[in-house]
Each structure stands twice: as C-alpha cells, then as structure tokens.
Image (tube, rainbow, N blue to C red):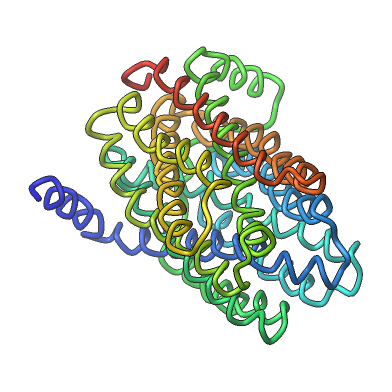
Length: 400
C-alpha cells in the first residue's frame, strides 16, 4: 500500500503548475491518435468483406499504417529539433483527420490503401515531438511522464476501438469517422496550450555531417541493443494488435462486439501498467523492470492457441497486455541515453528504422494465417518476446 501511495503522489505532482495543461493536451492527443490507429483491427473483418481482402492483403493494409508511421519519424525528429514541437503536433492531428475523411469516402481498394498510408504519415509526426517536448518540461521525471502519456494512449486504445465495435453495426465508415471531430478539437487545443517554441537546436539540419554524427552515436552497443529490442517489441505489438480481433472471431467463435471488447481490454490494462512501469524504471532501472513486464506476454502468447472460452481468454488477454509497460521503459531509457543536442533526430532515426522493420510483421503474420497456421504464429510471438527479455538483461544498469 505504501508503494501505491507513493506512485499516486508522484503522478499527481506531474499535473501541478502551468506544465500540467501542456501535459494534459499532449496526453489527450496521444490517446486519440493511438485509439484511431487501433480502430483498424476492429474494422478489418468488415473491410475485408467490402473490399474482398485476404488475411495477407488485410495485413498489408495495417502494415501501410505502420510503414507511414515509420517513414515520418526521422524527419519529424529533425523538424522538432529545428522548429519546436507545437506546430508539428498540430500538423499530425490535422493530417490524420483529413486522411480519415478520404478513407471513409474510398470506393476502391486502391483509394483505401492510399488514404490509409497517409493516416500513418500523419501519426508519425506526433511521437518523437511528444517525447522531446516532455523531456524538456520534465527532465527529472521522464519515466513517470511517459508512463502517464502512454497510459492515456491506452485509454484511447481502449475506448475508441470499443466504440467502433458498436458503431460498425451501422456501417464501418461510421465506426471510423466519429473520430474526426475529436481530432479537430485537439488541433485547436494544441495551438492554445503548448509552448510557442521549444526548439533546442534551431540550426539542426539534414546535412551529411549531421547524419554522420547521429549514426555514429547510434552505433554504440547499448543503443544497438535497444534498437533491436524496440524493433522486436514494435513488430510483436503491431502483429498481435492487427489480427487479434480477427483471430477471436474466426478461430475462437466470438462475435465482433465481444472480440472488440477483449481487444479493448488488452489496452485497458496498459492504463495501469504503463505508469507503474515508468515509476519502476525511474526506481530500479531497465534491467530489473523490463524483463518483468515482458514475462507475462511470453506465457500468454504460448497459452493462447490452447485456450477456449470467454473467461480463459479474458485472463490470457490480461496476461499478454503486461508487455505494454515496456514502452514507458524503453523510450525513457532511449531519451536519457541519446545526447540531448541530437535527441529528436536520434529518436527519430531509431524509431523510424524499428517501426519500418516491425511493420513487416502484420503482412507476414497474415501470410502465415492464410496457410492455416494462425496458432503457430502466436507461438512464434512467444519465442520472440522471450528473446527480447534475455537481451534486456545485457543492457547496462543505467543509461548513458
């Protein structure tokens, strides 16, 4: 109880003063954007029916979101270093809103895929600028702050897909377009409540010299290991989230509403797991905190093909969802390890590379599923998360 009380006190302190409003808006934006991204898996069965998609092509649709998400993160880091974060965060939510309008109006698979790619590009402008801004505002509490914002992201990933699962009964377009007004409101709020300019390096550029310096820093063994961990984790999360509702419907016999409920439960646990993981990172470091949050997913993925029934799969979903806490740990570690003068660019490079490679997961998993090996795919995910856990034990106890 004393630990819980300490956590509650630490988290409540983050909202004090003028910085609290900026934190609230950033966290809310992160929640809505993450929730929007995770609506796609809920709509995937409906999209597959309307546009005649196989598991492989449906996986490619989700992969496009993640590819777009990956492509933009490196240049967004550079732009955050040069111009500050407010304009970049506003551009992110505005781009996603416009792209979603095109998605719901799509009449052909080509239009659907193209607009979905722009959704990913819009999403890519937010995460690096969010991290660099928060690290400026809360330099001594980055683990806690990222844990809070990531928990808000999971709140969005809990509520928005659940809402979409209900609205899809009307039409899949309704299950997506309801997010657009929220994004418009967010664009206004970001302009009002964020600092006008938080740039740390107005002279940063995309010169060969700058890129060589960044890549030289990122070749440090610690950052290479972190890149592999981040790549593997992103690939597992993207793959699991892309097909879990479809798996529950097609392989476990659940209705779309129940499947979307279990999918939302996965992210609901992250609301609690991520702040606790952030505090754990600040307290005991990455080598002790990261293996703990990943171990549940190893067991959960291995058990998933063996379980049937609502309550057993509910318990297993909760077990798997403990891995969501790793995001607060890994990104806090990266923000402290990368030199501050190239933090935005460095984070952008690492996240872009990891997200790009990790984006291949859904389409590869879809190919496995099309060949009748849906269950075997989850056993492979268990092995991969186990490998990440072992690699985490080789990281230095402290960043730097």
